[in-house]
Image 1: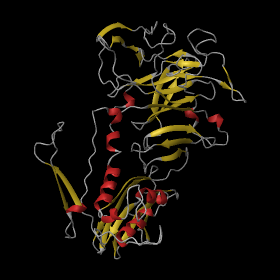
Image 2 (image 1 turned 180 degrees about the horizontal axis):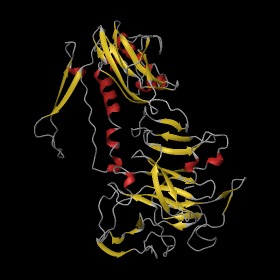
Image 3 (image 1 turned 120 degrees about the vertical axis):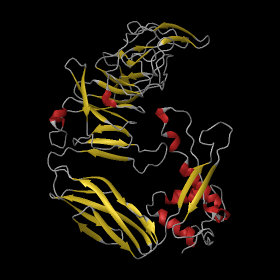
Image 4 (image 1 turned 90 degrees about the vertical axis):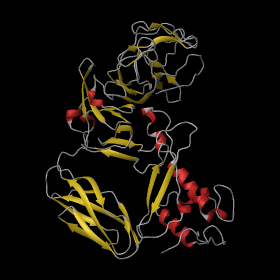
Length: 497
């Protein structure tokens, strides 16, 4: 349990993991073995471990109560050992007893920082992990701290010489559960090979690892865990009572409704495994009638069984083939959702993603080019660009129907590389569309008008899976009777062909 509340004393609980025994009446007792005995001056008895920068995803071994956590480290990219200290590291930590894990005086395997005076810019002593001293003027606790303990795994942004298995890139260390097969006597769990191993993972890098410790608790090795499973920003992991490993996937976008976020699970299968689909490609996703499309799926069976393909063409027709490809012609205008089910000889199957095909009209092609001399950003200097749009059907495109949005990513902080590319485009594009169409005469963003405001429309249809196509038809054809008796005309910028 992580706590940041100051409670009754000035001793700050930030950067601490506290251990309590909660009573039925809501009060709590202090268990034996915490870091400071009750009554110790300038301490809190609730503290189990201290010296944490950001302990993210805490896990407890259900058999021996060993504490595991990932530690999200600072962003510094370079060592400045003489004047400031080491670069940033993320950590994987383990505690079988109370202790101090170093931050902000130490990081990784107790790499020390240098005492730095921000007023004078002068560097002082290098901190000693055997006898850490906190001389900060903001310190309300002990001056002499318990000896620091190092992390069992630690890694920077770049490749790690000590732990090459973790890769490189953005970092966000997390600790998962420790597995024991005898906790799941009804089956459904992992093989006994994983007994006593702790599963760790990294949200940014997308890997999961199984960690083995020696009998004395020191690090032995880590190895890939379920490496053939692609996760989309895994943010939490728990063992279920049925022996499954449950995964909470945040999704690839920041602060947005991600289509690839999910609550999923890993279930061990000691027998036949279903085929794996790596990709499905449709050569044309729009075009004039009659529209002929060729679809191809890249799939394999892990037992090398013969596989067959059942294609759903979105028009009520399904076809089964022995080859991983199909050709089909749509004669009627509409939007069709194509998918394929891949089956092995044992009857196990996997379904592909769905690809939408619009028959009856080609999507415009848009190209953006930067003018010469504007490839490098300079503050205050306009970025000159040109947008060209063409229509494969030969129709003229109204320039007023072209909307441009810009994302801006500040700095080169790899921890936040995804952030700048995820939170602007949809909002900017949507607002530009509403302001560019003549719909704005009847509809406002949030204020009242003759028609419903866009926020009310969004709230009404946010859980309706068919809302997108329904509202598109409303824009094209107009309508009335949903929000009142006033008829809403169609937009003059959109016409049926």
